[in-house]
Length: 142
Image 1 (tube, rainbow, N blue to C red):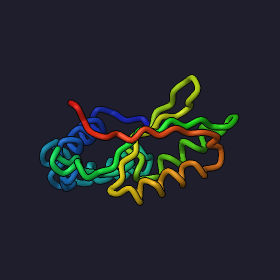
Image 2: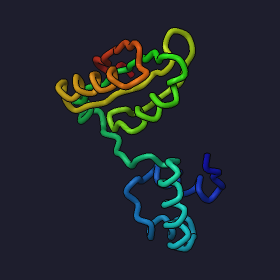
Image 3: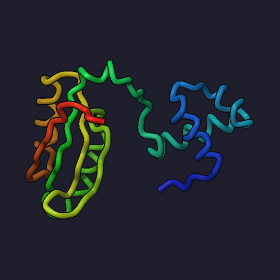
């Protein structure tokens, strides 16, 4: 696991505000050398502290997305390998370990039912996945 310090946290915080900020902009806002920001950003990406850059859509745009929560049961001691495989899927927007019947809980997001069906199949076929249950999210209440 990569250790992150206050400078790394400041870079991450700025990227959470504006994920499209250039290295030059980040350096200027944070009062750091451009090379320092670039090196740290590269290290954060390589170590998977930062896994991806994404956007949050406003309410009007998200109504077309297909979203769901999926609970997954894994066989034996395969949780780590299943977790790593799930982390590589761009449709998985969050991943949580839990206890009880389900070992992992994930949130999924796709742009169509066709893609949704495909990602469910890919997840269910992962080595180590023994059972799953999926709850589509129909509409946001608040």
